[in-house]
Image (cartoon, rainbow, N blue to C red; front, side):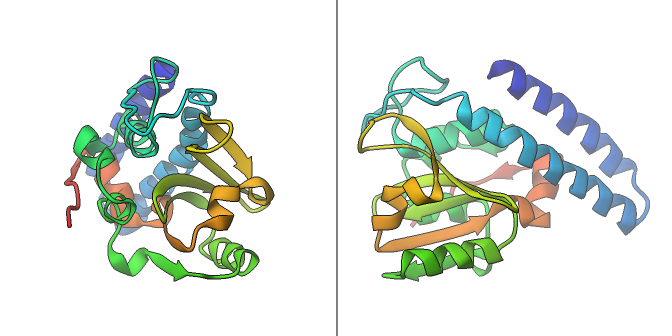
Length: 206
């Protein structure tokens, strides 16, 4: 996990050098496309390093397996260790919509209430492939969306009470939630630019 984090930082640094040296919009767009590809490859590996780490409502573990971890701290830790400049503890303690709003504008969020699960998944697929944060009634998690599947990766406050990686058909917490807010992080050029350049993501607070 730490090696993945350090390698990602080294890649980010090289991308920042390329971005700052770019002289055309085409060159800058290519850097951001490379950043997106890098994050979409690395982030799921980092999330899965946490699999089996026990859940606790008050869990504040900062690394996989070192202690128990609540859902918000799981999301905040992965994002920080993927070299997003965030306020780790403050971010983890926010409502799920504020966690998402820390990274994306409201115009890039899809909010649905009491929507049929299969219809909701179709809307998620329509957002395109990428790394998403999804907020639920009282939970926050990652959705990893590819051309072939949707994976729900989260610190689960239900059986088996740990960080799990679930296929869409097995994601009961996502299925049961009445409220769902989601945004595709890696599809947002402004977010990618801020990550590449190491800019801060101030925590959104109500």
